[in-house]
View 1 (cartoon, rainbow, N blue to C red):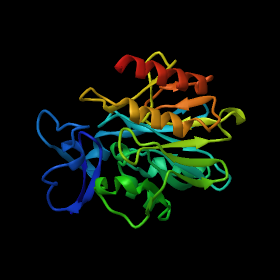
View 2 (cartoon, one colour; view 1 turned 120 degrees about the horizontal axis):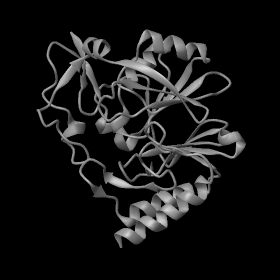
View 3 (cartoon, rainbow, N blue to C red; view 1 turned 60 degrees about the horizontal axis):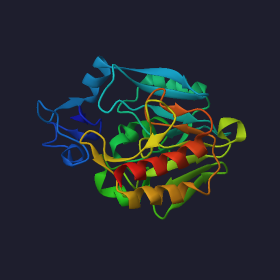
Length: 267
């Protein structure tokens, strides 16, 4: 019996004697089925072919698979007094990575922006004693490996510590979530957006999509809702979904300008 991981999106599936027949996340119109067909790797095979690497992302520890795997996202560790919070998740947990996180103070919780980044959330939770995994209830149907540690929260916001606030913005998915870190950016505030609002290549703006690989833009009403959800927050920095895709300073103004630019472009 092996745990299976989708090669295209990185979602992990329960242990079984054969791979799943399909991946519902990849069959959804926001994602895609691999051109060579639906393929899965066992956890053991993924461990043999890939490793986890660490980088500094504007003061946060980040980790991702190398070579790049699935969507290529990286997770970020937001430090807290009683352990780190992992923002977004990767498709593999290794003993070496777990040991490194313990050296940074351990892991107290996991929060994930949307189903494309659920990855090996159950493995990561188990590695730290069954820590909670915060997923918005609106995206409950996309969980491919159910786990007792998953907390399907509801509503538009959830405070998980005195300086960390989960914010349901919608957009990319119904339960799409951002993380506001009020003490980030040297106390000026930081917004961790995944690709709900993705930092552009020039790192001066963000943009919005319903589907990135299939080039389906998000409608103006959804973008306005995201903007309204973010407006009350103070932040000077944005951490995006991939290495280096961050806005280091002036992010609040950049976000507002990005919303207007985007809506003008699709009008």
